[in-house]
Image (cartoon, rainbow over all chains, first blue to last red; front, side, top):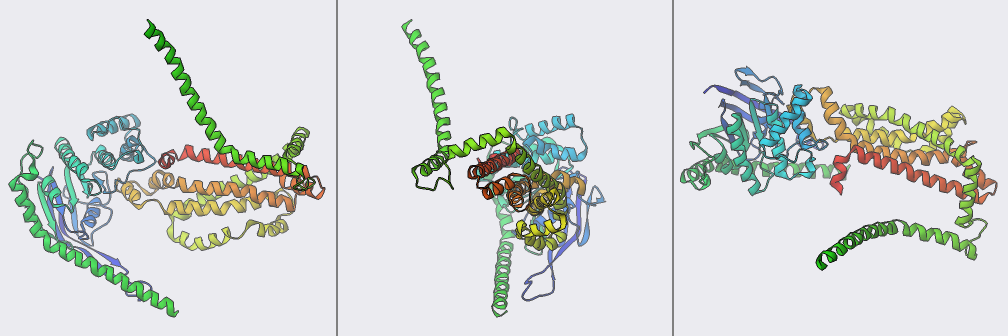
Length: 291
Length: 277
């Protein structure tokens, strides 16, 4: 199958001013992503899994065109990504719905940006609200909807303007376990209906194995692609419970083995970061006392 | 047959009792909302009559209301009210027209906002009335100085709230809109402005309250018309009931202004208001 997205030698580093104020250290570049290479095929469901703080969301921002790589390039259909565009839709963990718009208004938002006429907009928005199973809730405001419903609206909004690629940034992480499982299987159904290319970021191994055709495992910071694993299940929407399938269990374990050390390392990084910030806070306090 | 009749009898009764329950709830609410005021008014009426308070300086409410009615009939009250309202609405409207667009612009350019904020905080916390002498010196005793002082008192709460409204728009909403390829202009129009409306309205309400407050004080210092002038003049001339009539008028106007602004806010930010219920 044709390559949809190819990520070639992408690096991303930030300049973060740490210990500002008291110690006035020079801004030190922090490497978030290191030499990322990944190809995503047309219509593929690709899951990227990694420990927290490994740069998964940075990678998604790059794919969305919200930031640019420090080096390397990302190609969409062979052309470099120049910026945000409606050919890619994003679904965020925190829904990012506009609270002053109804569910329908939110779904129409992207269509409006695309320049679709009023009538057509309404018609299409209704179709997608229907697709995510929210008919009857068109005129509700986001605060009147549950978390799962909000995420359905967000998915409908991103699908409505018909992007070629759907980027999902831990979309189900804020939901309770049961809602999450329902939405996972709904997402698979939607993916099979719409045939979109999906890049799905998560830190859940089970979620990764359940959803992905391939799972890319990332290392702790600076993030690299450690390994890409094929998940060879044919039909996921079958009756039997995939999660208790021995093959599923084996794959989940394989990924856990790959991730285990990374998670430990990520937690160490987190700890030292927290300690650092405490130290600098203490230093600042000291200065304040003497000053 | 008997059953049918019983049913017929029961039905209107049920309706009646439901209607009764409704009106009972309404009555209870009315009672809750008004009982404290009614009691205070009663105390106002009774204490001077019993000689507990000096009746000359604190006439019973019934006398005050009678004077108020006479002032209304003579047209004096309307003239003063009109004078006050035109000044306060003028300054308030002018402040809205100037400071909301200005605040949106300042909030959008964050560095500008960071430079200006300390200055705006300073100005807001400088009591407008402290500057009144300056306004009178520069603009004279006419209408201009009064409209100007109201404008001054309104502009800072409006500016500060508009700026903070724009600055505090959820970055995720901006990110989401940007990911849909919105350019700066439509991002501003479709995301920043609607998202900051609730905070802007806080400023509008604060400004509405201070527009009346400041105006009355300004009219007491230097004016030949207006409710502030009426109160001050009545006190100097020992027309005590007139003075109280003026005070009551001002508190009623304040109440009405607040009510109008709150209901406007409810209409414009209904999506948020519901969440609090």
